[in-house]
Structures are given as structure tokens and as C-alpha cells.
Amino acid sequence: MAHGQKSPRWALTQGFSSLALGLSLFSLLLLLLTVSAADEYDYYSWQSDNFHNGRFYTKQPQCVDIPADLRLCHNVGYKKMRLPNLLDHETMPEVKQQAGSWVPLLAKRCHADTQVFLCSLFAPVCLDRPIYPCRSLCEAVRDSCAPVMETYGFPWPEMLTCDKFPIDNDLCIPMQFTGNQATQPPVSKVCPPCDNEMKADNIMEHYCASDFALKMKIKEVKKEKGDRKLIAAQKKKKVLKQGVLRKKDLKKLTLYIKNGANCPCAQLDSLSTNFLIMGRKVDQQLLLMSIHKWDKKSKELKFAIKYMKSHQCPTYHTVFHFNLNQVVKGIVLICLDDSDMLMLEREKSCTLCSSNHIIKNPK
Image (tube, rainbow, N blue to C red; front, side, top):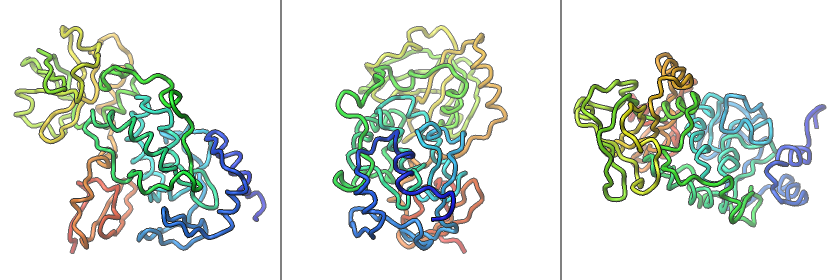
């Protein structure tokens, strides 16, 4: 072992102390010293060649610091991560871009292990072999958080299909909280789009994850088939981010809080003021992502509105609604990410490309 290099024993005790893996050191060393033949998941060696899962890596796996602006995992409990990560992201810009879309979900506190699960994939701890989350951990987080994601029109993404993760009697990261602990701190009963602090960073996270943003008044609120329906007043609306909105959308603007017919939303108790509205267009329906009362005295709101004018959002949120089933077998995909990398993939291996960055049958 090279001078200064930390042993697997050190990496486990230090790197995973906060995750409390509950695994014996003997089991870990046994896995690290033998070549796993597990058919449940493909554990590949740190010193393996550059080809994995049909994808060619331009760099050997390495340990890197978790940067402060990787907000999803910066405070996860360890300081270094493996790159490429377990979602096949090869560069830090790619990791930041894709991980950023999950930050708002952490604030919803849908499950106490959400960060542990996501960071085990986006920013895995450095060991000689990757350790994946247990299937039960994935299922617990999915069952608690998928309904919250559905509120925003996001399905549980295919890249996180729980069946592909190892079962609990394998070497994997288990649940840290069980039973009543899993929802600590308490999950809010407030409608998710209404459960937001008036903080500039919170506003900007939702702004970047939304298709459109408006300053507007609400004329009426109704309940419809389990959803809450927000009908905009006909007065002039100020468009802060038009995105996918068309003129006909703005003329008769109607937004929905998915499954929000009966959950409380304090912002809608009084409709006398203007609102900052952010949302997404899903299947021709406008879904509310976030709502704030337009408080002219709020420094946080003023800062966020000013920042919107110059801030260029990444396109990370498209990872949720890119349908892999639409990829035709055998078509070559060219995926251009924000780090100007060019990747050639076949079939379904280009899992994280934004749909507007895909070129079919390139010449």
C-alpha cells in the first residue's frame, strides 16, 4: 500500500461511521479480497479495466473531495467520494447537475434515510469495491417519497428501480431508521408545494426545477377529483420564466396541486395578494411546484427575484421524466452534458441525458 493511502479498514470505520452499516469487518474484508460472483448486482473492482455495464470510462476510478456546492451530499457524514459514482457519472459537473434535482426532496422530509440512500449512489464512500444500498432501503425511501414526487409530476425514475439493488443478506447499506424513526423529524401534512420556507436558496432550487415562474393573483380555488385547482385572475401576470408556457396557457391559466384536495395550504387562506407561482407542465396540465405570497418587504424574495434575471439553471430535472422505453433498440445516442463531454451509447445505457440533448441516428 502506497505511503499515505488509507486502508479499507480505516475507510469503513471513518467513512461509514455516520451511516452505521452494522456489517462485520470480517464480511467486508472477505468481499474485498475475493471476486464476487453475485448475480444480484455487478460489484466491480476499483482496479478493474475502464469498461463497465457496456460503458467506456475515460478515467480510472478515484477518490475526490465532496465539494461544498454538491448540496445533496456535502453534509452526509464523510468527506470523500468515489468517481465515477454508482450512477455512471464520470465528472463532478455531471454529478452536481444530476444530484441538484434531488435537493428539494430532502426538505420534504419524506423519509429519514433519503439522503443516505441518494448519496450512496451519487457520492459513494471510497472503498476498494463499491457498496450499494440494500433493496429494503431503496424500497423504504421510494414508498415514502414517491407520493411526494408524484405531487410534482415526477415518477420514481427508472435508474432507481429497487429490484436491481442487492438483498439485505448481501453486503450493502441498510436502513438507518426503522418504524416510527423513519419519519423523524415529523413529515409535514401540508401540501408539498405549500411547505416551503421563504429563503432565497429554497426559492432558487424550485425555480430551477420548474418549467415556469409567474407573479400573479389567484381568483378562485376549487377541489377536483382529489386535486386542488387554482384559477388565475385575469389581471396582468408577470412572467419570470416562461419555459413551456404558451399564450393560450397564460390566457386561461389553471394550476393543480396533485392529490392536494384536502391537505392544508396556508398561502391560499387569503387570495388578496399576489403570489410567486412556480410549476411544471405535465401531460398538458400545469402542476404547482411552489407557491409564496409576494411579500414586498421580504429581503429573501427580493434577492431571489433579482438573482433569477442573471442565473442560468442547469437542465438536471429532465432526468425524472426522460422515458427510457422510448429509446429504440440499436439507435446510437449522442449525449451532451454541461461539461462538454461527448458520450456514445447504445440501447438504454444513456440513462441521464436530457431528452432535448439526444440526437437520433447521427451521421
